[in-house]
Length: 145
Image (tube, rainbow, N blue to C red; front, top):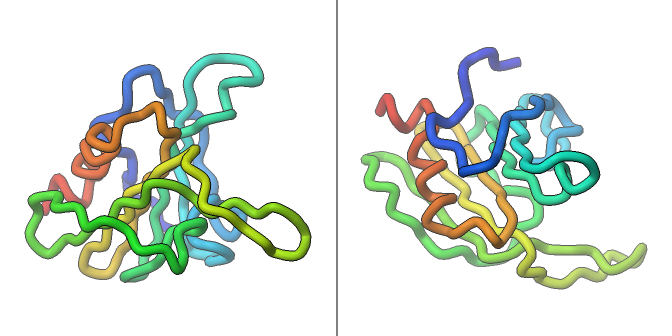
């Protein structure tokens, strides 16, 4: 598994790094073995984990963040040559065992594609889209580009 530093240099006010997950249990790109997720939370107690900032990484190009599949996003210009990004203003939520789902506005995300890697950031909606883009721009691979 990747051992490189994936932590963004800019983290949202009040959020603290809590833990790193790897493999299919990571909340990012489905059941891929080679994915990593960094989870940042705020607060304490039960509410601490209710609305995390999650930074996901997989060493594969052009992957789709789970929960945004088959939903067009809005292109985002990060101002970095060779890097593309898309913003999604919600997340698919399942309503029951039959697989019915609806587009929920309780979270939003930015998915970033570089030369062979995909990053995705998901945050609660009380975090502004501009702040989410700032976090994306501060990812180590993008800063060193």
